[in-house]
Structures are given as C-alpha cells and as structure tokens.
Image 1 (tube, helix red, strand yellow):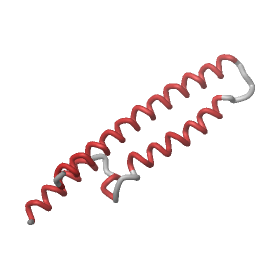
Image 2: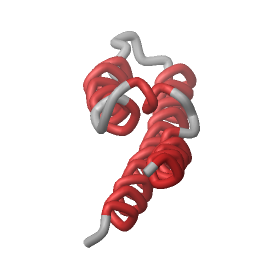
Image 3: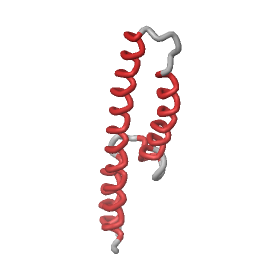
Amino acid sequence: MSVDENRRRRAHQIAEARHTFRWHFSAYLIVNLVLVLIWFFAGSVYPWPLLLIVFWGIGVFAHYIAAYHGQGGDWTETGKGSGKILDEDNLSTKSE
C-alpha cells in the first residue's frame, strides 16, 4: 500500500469516527431529554434520569476523546483534520 493510500484510509477512518460520534451525541441528547421529561411529568421524587445521564455521558465523553483527540497530533483539534492529512501529503510530494 502506498503512502497516499495509507493517508487516505486514515483520513477516512477519522472522518467516520467523527461522524459516528455526532450520531452518538445526538442520540444521547434526545433520549436523555425524553427521559427527563418523563421523570418531570410523572412527578417522581428521585431523579432517576441522572444515573443514565452520568454513566452514558462517561461513554459519550470517551467516544469524543477517541474521535477527536485519539488519532494523532494537534491537527485533530480542528474540524478539518482529515483534509489536513491530505494537504500534508500534497505538500510532502511537491517538496520531494
């Protein structure tokens, strides 16, 4: 496999990880909002949705770290990290 193919594959993996995180985070927000509304209108005293919010939130946070900070250096902090990989590849091939 060439260097270009490796970088493209890596860029695709990063983009896919970020995409799945966005879906995971959206599901987390929607489900927990519905559960809080159920708890509120049911008149329950014990705030049981907090258990799910906290423990699922730990999983969402871990997913965020893996998707945005777990696959490289500083370039992952930008929203366009996968594009930067490809740009770096173009710069390195031009300078050679």
